[in-house]
Image (tube, rainbow, N blue to C red; front, side, top):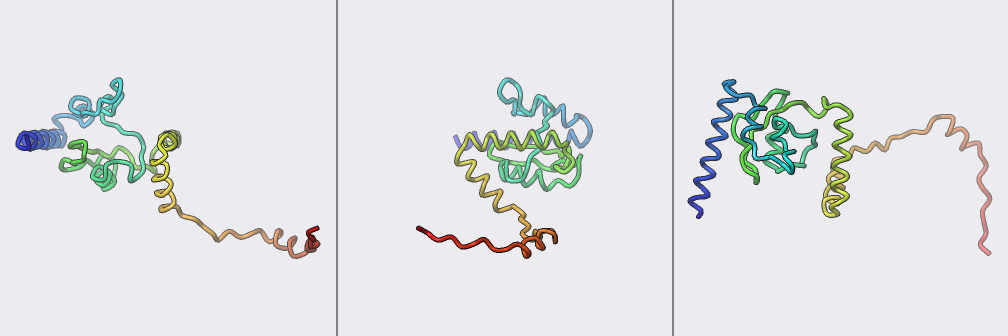
Length: 165
């Protein structure tokens, strides 16, 4: 019933608020809380819960919008959301481990390859990814040719005109 759903939601939020208080008071480490309480068990136990809540390197606009906004609003490594973040998947506590620019190159490459592989498996997702890339691309059209190339072109004779038979 709607009343039961509202009650479960209230209880879930209260549980997450208590976890935030316990983590802030150093009664439990974030990583231990994730292992113990996260619902992200994943297939074969390989979800983020198994590794203390750590998610892979990611870009913007790839998560649930509420999760994405809260995660990218965190300023520096170690910062944690002060209140529960509600997404379509439930409530979350987000702690920033490192900024994308700090991620190891191998991790960035692996992430980009994984994302591309996923997009190629989903034509609609590929189209959305391409639209995102085009909207966020920074293209520099001010490329200049070296002076030696310009000098050679001006010294070259034009090719003779061709006639059609």
